[in-house]
Length: 113
Length: 113
Image 1: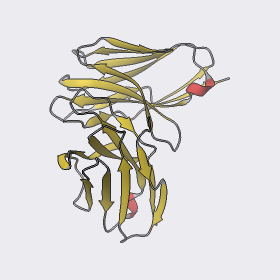
Image 2 (image 1 turned 90 degrees about the vertical axis):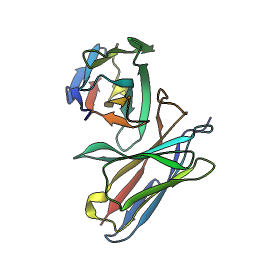
Image 3 (image 1 turned 30 degrees about the vertical axis):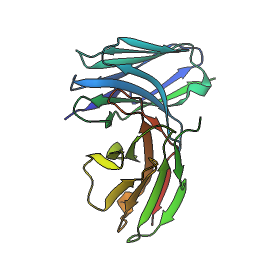
């Protein structure tokens, strides 16, 4: 059974700092990994999708990497801003699970002005 | 291009009642998945539909059911509501294929009293 773990559970940083969020998964047989952002009481916003054959994806100040063999992914946020404050969720799609995503518990990020 | 639309956004029910939630996927997306999000259990997969057929089902009791219509719109139904069914119910749509990116709606917040 796939399990996804995110560390840390919560993170508070001053504005402008670069930061890294970690995600690990137990079964490396995945199609892809997706990072999401969730604001309080809202749905999920897709940030980055990394296919299993890729090593990293970039969008603006965000960069996500994937090491499938070791079951790890990182989300790097450069020059953090207060508007980045949200919960960040990592999810993997297994090779035998159709479109089903297995989610981590999330990292709650607070960026202080 | 419109995103995933879920209705209603908020609803309050009492124990024993039933509820129906609706999801309209992104135009052209034929796969629709449903997830339940609670503070204690996080995000859990309910079921996935593709071309009006249930392709995958999570570990939820039979009180939780769903269907998909020919226009890809989907509904989920929860019968005999329990207090523990209070949650944010999220719908996601994607293009056909396992490598597809999932896009989520804003969710339906269900409170059971």
